[in-house]
Picture (tube, rainbow, N blue to C red):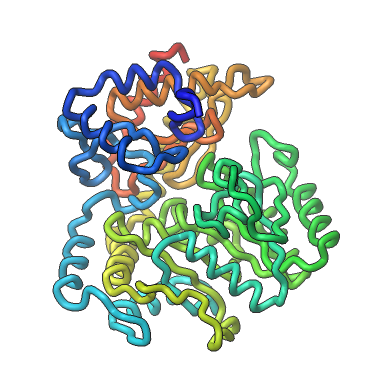
Length: 446
């Protein structure tokens, strides 16, 4: 592997800009980064690291020198920002009483969480299984679909992400996770995902649905359709008619609809769950990331009462199957979203972000498209608005200019600036962060 391929940021390969960034660190930071590079197994999108962090609070984190970055990425765990005092208090209280609950026993924290999440879900979505991470939640969802339908085939979308476990990458749509992995989950049929700006079905939900049904009828024995309700990485918000059409197709053909909302639920889109925007509901819902409040790894699935038919099968026989720590944090996350009226804050934040990003698009020719919902936005940079040629080099320049000035985010698809701030970010902080973005776009020539 050559040096060029070793260093990546998102799916943007390193350039002299990365080398310049690395060389700009102070000796202490360089030393820690060298140790990190030496002892951790290298992998795409994680190695080498950008900086060394020492603290985090609210909408930002800080490095060894005390430099603060607004975090517009957060691995999607930061709906409530970092180090929320209520979450820390709840975790410490549980830690001092019952930090672990072995299998075959239950606990009040786990039961309270299950009752709460079920109460928030519509219809008969009342059955819960807790898992230690999102990939495991997807695994359980696939098991349920096989057990209920008796079919193992799955439809998923190209470019989708459903976790990094072997079965999750087998159904996922990003090739970077499947390279060199050999045989994976059999029976996966991938179709293009919904996209409004580019793609063969852009702006044509009817044709897209027609193609999905074509695949269903050709395969004949599809058991599940697995998808992100709204694609998180490059922010694709489908038309309402698309998801309602998918729901009808699943009903017609006896297919279970699995919605992966691991990165986008819990208020990110302005609703507790993203599917609420589309007046439909899944058969299985996968949740995670923000469920642990950035303090504890916690995920779960929620499914229908009538699918409670696996008494003789171990669907998710995990060591931390009913973690009291994860459960109390998750319950507190849900309570904070309600008590602090986070959904109302997101509505106001969406209006501000839409207005600012629209103004930037009018000002800078390199912005080909802006798209988003709630506090999840994508800014797609192009070399030419007519040809839509991706401006990958320009995207990386903007990223490093923003990092230099204290704004961190990820690039997706090579040219999409994905902006995902904490939902608790203040108006002043949000303005400051978007000022950094606008000034960075100006600095590279727009």
